[in-house]
Image (cartoon, rainbow, N blue to C red):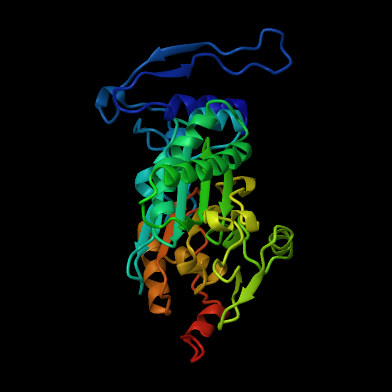
Length: 382
């Protein structure tokens, strides 16, 4: 986007009701000019009042209403989320970036056929520029998932103050939370669930455009790009050659249950987790695999974080298609969790749906084949 168009964007969309803002009072100069700079003046205006109307009739204020420009103002389709533009990141990255509001994020968690729900999830505005999204799927009791829900964000926030690389931040945070949980169990020996553990899938969204995901276990993160599911995590299971080799090098072994599922030392269905301290010497680690991706709001529709109560029964593209049929993220999250239960999932099922700029663009009514669901529905499942 040209500098002149961003100047108009700043003029038309930068303020909210009764709030003072910075606007340019000079046109962007040519980048090769010696004294190229911006001068800013501070002023405030009240919106939706006769005296505050701007008769600009520009692309960024087409109806001359004086209302802040939103991402939906640029819309081509009907279901876009009405969100304001993040002006400083938009200028910095050279493209319009919509704000992702906590109020628009959809979350749902069902207990399924279990005695208790050991899944935990959390969404928060961690800092002014970073959104925190996380799911934790506990096993052997909810203690590890509860601990992560309570402290993971704090560890990450402290590390962000010292380190700008979010992949390094997530790696250090996972390892430090694992150590802190071990100390917690050591000093409170009577706490139940000494061998409790949890998966952890955490996503950090900085400036509305830089997405970084870290994960241990078999909870997943998936991005819907141009209507297609793009996996951002890979399950840590003994079926993976690299994971199996680490377990064997550490003295652990792999067994298979009656359903043909591999387990570490006959107990754990994953090779990385937070907690599970009885298997730490057997190669089960808390170090996450991380991935960084730059969002393109013109064709990225949403981010979905799910636990295995959803993953085992529905494949990624099927989840993507169902969410794309929904009018808003909250309904989408509820529909996915309900659908997993109807398809036969007996586990806790949790999902978080975070909408991006292309929400509503890629509607899809196709249903895709799910081998896992057909397997569960067969007579072999017990």
